[in-house]
Amino acid sequence: GPSLSVDTACSASLVALHVGSLSIILDKISHAAIGGSLLIASIVSIAFSAAGMLSAHGRCHTFDG
Image 1 (cartoon, rainbow, N blue to C red):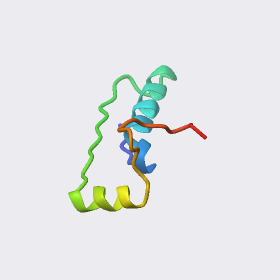
Image 2 (spheres, rainbow, N blue to C red):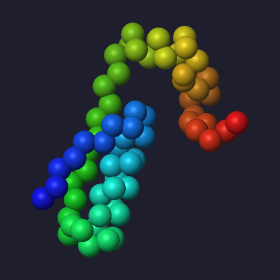
Image 3 (cartoon, rainbow, N blue to C red):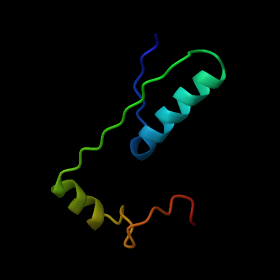
């Protein structure tokens, strides 16, 4: 069956789940195996925090203005 890579930065695992679910709903496929991984070294977390890319509250605020 089909195999694809989803590269949308932070939302890649959720988008992969959506694509797999939608493909099943639309009868394009009968089964899906969906996986995600997160590899963040401490230096990356420190850089993201210094750049203001991480929430100070530990919660996602994706659509907050």
